Length: 86
Image (spheres, rainbow, N blue to C red):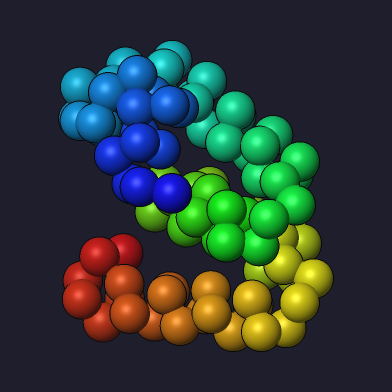
């Protein structure tokens, strides 16, 4: 999944700064629903990652039953924190 494609799909733009609060809430709600329905591990990770960057990600044990996916998510969280991205 391409990041710009995700933004376009859920927020109708690739520029989150231009998204109204109502559009942000609606897009985030759709993201959460799709995360809950998604079976593909890579797609789930992409959806969870975007939710994490928006401050709306569910807990790792809820989002990822597989411990290796939880570890990958922790690695992403650590990388973003180290880069100042959080």
